[in-house]
Length: 257
Image (tube, rainbow, N blue to C red; front, side, top):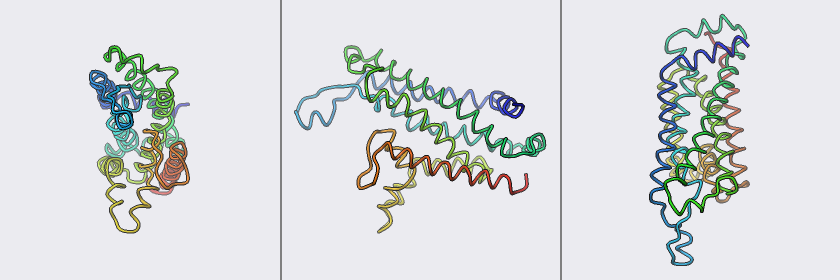
């Protein structure tokens, strides 16, 4: 319990967590407001019927959460781990709690709860922001009965926790803020698609890359020629996240503080 209280104090006693949390909310809710002001016509409906029918799609409303806000999650999850190394007081934490795995799990658990709640609140606020500004189109998004809305309300917090697991695993391996954020940022935004340009192996990287599977779940778009649908994709990403997190935890135990 003392370890949890200590890690909670560290989490909430820095200005960075408040600024980045504000950005998380701003990106998600701000984009939802802009989207709601000018909802585009559904391209598939127009393709089949030739009519410009505008329907609010929940996955489109929270598109900025999936991209920009989740990058903020990467930054926060990294700083939870690496700030101690940057300020060189990680030894104090490990002296206070000799069982280093307790420190690792406390950091993961506390920030996972924090980000799950923040993500749920942001997604819910985004959906209602779009409904509020979209006028007569608001009726096309019944938040609590729409399949897409239900998916983002539970799916995005789950995805956020798994992204934290993945990111903190990388952070424990590297122990360096700029390096971990750079690697995760590149991986999150571009790496797998760039590697997909490689001959022969590229198509397999695109199909089985963890971030591509992560995005497939967020957008409810199953990857072609793969053994699972978008729900299986988040389970696949979860396996990657757990394996990397365990690798990071093992390294923490074995190397010098």
